[in-house]
Image 1 (tube, rainbow, N blue to C red):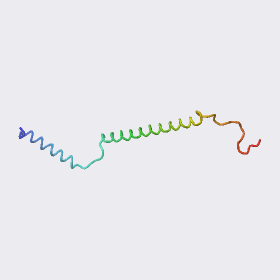
Image 2: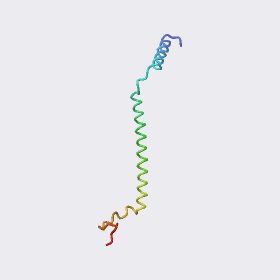
Image 3: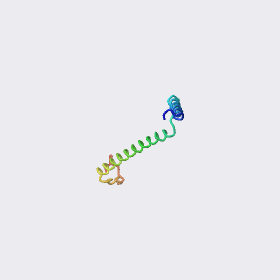
Image 4: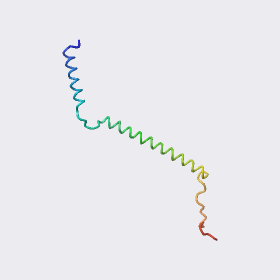
Length: 86
């Protein structure tokens, strides 16, 4: 069965194709590889953006708690504090 001419031809053909593929010079990344690389970069960027947003919101909450949810803002009394004697 394995000595049938079509099988011998197919095996020889596949061996030649495999050898050519192994020895072919690389021509850069294919479209599929570019899609995978882009997806990885986008995923990392999204993860970093989420991490930064979480950290900033956490610090914002700490600052709001320290100042009584925003405090009173500026005094607005019109007088300067430095050297104001009255």
